[in-house]
Amino acid sequence: MCGIVGYVGTGAALPVLATGLSNLEYRGYDSAGVALADGDLDVYKRSGEVDALRAALPESAPQHRGIGHTRWSTHGPPTDANAHPHTGCSGDVAVVHNGIIENYDALRAELDADGHTFTSETDTEVVPHLIEAELETGASPREAVRSAVERLEGSFAIVVTIAGDDELYATRRDSPLVVGHGDGEQFLASDVTAFLEQTREVTYLEDGDLAILAAGGVTIERDGETADPDRETLDWEADAAEKGGYEHYMLKEIHEQPAALRQTLSGRIDPDAGTVDLDLDLPAEYVSSLEEVQFVAAGTSNYAARYAAELVEELADVRATVEIASEYEFSGGRDPWRTLTVAVTQSGETADTLSAIRSASRAGARTLSVTNTLGSTVTRETDDSLFIRAGPEIGVAATKTFASQVATMTMLSVALGRQRGTLSSDRASEVLSSLRGVPGAVQQVLDRADDVGEVAREHADADAFFFVGRQYGCPVALEGALKLKEISYDHAEGFAAGELKHGPLALVTPDTPVLAIMTDGSRPDATLNNVKEVQARGAPVIGASSHEGADRYLDVEWPVPDVGVLEPLVANVYWQLFAYYVAESKDRSIDKPRNLAKSVTVE
Ligand code: F6R
Image (cartoon, rainbow, N blue to C red; front, top):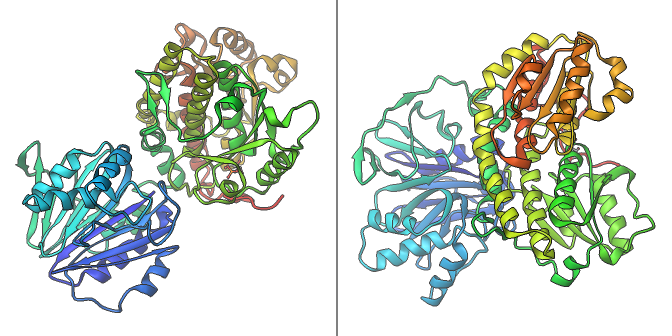
C-alpha cells in the first residue's frame, strides 16, 4: 500500500526523505514523490521506481522540512501527475495521503465551481485545495488543516506542509501514522521502517489525532485538547521492521486483512439502502438479458471465483460457471452476447487467465477483470475492470487478495442482482450488512492466532491434512488445502464434504486431521454427518464453526462470528493461520515457497 514519510528539523530534509522512500519500497508502489518546504515549496514526482525519482532530485537541497510518498494507484493510473505530493492552485500547500477519500467527487465539484483547477485524477488532490480555501479565509494553518479534514469521508492518513510555515501537520482515520522523536528533529511515517535509522522513539497516532511537528518537538491534539500519549522504544531489526514486526510477509498480510477489506468496501456499499456503487458501466439491457456469468481464473483466484459463482447464482439468479483458466475455451452452447466473462486475477498478469480472456473476447463476449493491479495487462484487455484494493501482496501465497476478491465479487453479485431485479432490497441490505461486518469478524479470528498456532504445531507431523466444506465452504476447503500444501510442502487436499464417502474416506486415519467448515452458508447440518464419518475412523477434527452443538463432535472448535453467507470467508482466516504455523514449525521458506512464483506469466 502507499507509504508516507515526513521530516522537520535542523538537518537537511532531502536525504532523510529519500532514504525513507527507499525503506518503504518493500510495500509495493508505482510512483513516488517529495515536497521540500521553506519559504516556498519544491515538488518532485515520478511514476515508476524511487530510483526514477532520485534521478530527478537535486544532489542536495537546503530545506529542513519536507514530505514524501510512495503511491499504489487507486484513483487514476500511475503517472507523474497522479503521484503525490499534491498541491493546491497557489502551489503553497502540499499533501501526501494514504487511503481513500470517498466524497472526493462532491468536494471536487464544489471546489471546481469556486475556481480551483485540478491537475490530477486522484481523490487526494481535493485536500490541498480545501486547505488552501480555508487559508484564504484567514484561518491559521492548524485551523485550515482541521477544517479541511473534517470535510473528508473515508479512510486516510494525511500529512501536510505549507510554504512559509515551520511545521508539519498529520492526521489519520483508519490508516496508520507514527511519529518518530529525534533530538532537534522529528519524523513521520505510515510505517516505522521509513525512519528506523534515525530514531526508535515513537508515538503511534490514534484516529482523529492532529499532530503538529516542529524541529523542537511534537504537539498532539486529541479530542480538542493537547494530549501526551506514551512513547515507545522499538527494538526491531530492520528486517523485522520491513515486515511490520512480523516474521514473514505472509503473516503480516494475513493480519492486514481487516484493513484491506475496509479499503475494498470503502465508499462502495450502502447497507441501509441495499445499494452498491462499483463505478461500472454495464448497460442495463445487457445485464437484464444475461444468460451466464462465466469466471476464468487460476489457483487461489479460481477458488475466489467459485465462491463468487455461488453468490451470483443465489443473488443475481443467473447461471454462473467457473473455468480453470488454463483449460478454457469459449465453447459451444453459449450466446456470447449474453455472456459476461470475468477474469479474476490479483496480479492481472497471469498468462493462462489472459489467454482465456482473449479467447472470450474473440468469441464476442463482454469481459470484466477483477484485479488488484491498476494498469495491469488484464485491465487493458477487458471491457471493464473492478479493482479489489487489497494493497500490495508480497508473500507468494495469496491471502489478503483472496479475501478482497471475494468481498469485491460479493458486491458485484449484489449489484447484478439489484440491476436484474432478482434481489430484494431487504436481502441486499442483509448481505451488505454481513459484508460490512467481515473486517471486524476477521479481526476476531486474528485475535485467536496464538491458539491456532498451538493446535497447528500439535498436528504439524500428520501424514496428510484434509479440508472439507459444503456450498460456500467448498471453495474455502480447496483454498485451505492449497495454502497448506504451498507453504508447508505437506500433502493436503480439499473436498466437497459430501464427496468424502465417495472415495477420499479411504485415506482417512488417526494421522490425517480433517479441517471442516460448519458455518452459515456451508450446510453445517449435512457436514456434521461427514464429521462423524471421519471421527469414526479416528481422525482428529478441527472445525471453524458457528453451528450450535457442533462442539460435541469437534476435537477443536474455533468460533466464526455471525456474518451470514460470508462466514466461510472468515473461516478461511483460520486455515491461513493454520497453514502458516504448520509451515513455520517446519522452518519452511514461507514467503517464497520452492518452485513457485508470485506472478505466473507463462502458460
Ligand atoms: C496461491 C496463489 C496462486 C495464484 C494464481 C493466480 O497462493 O497465489 O494460486 O492465485 O497463480 O494468480 P493471479 O491471481 O495473479 O492470477
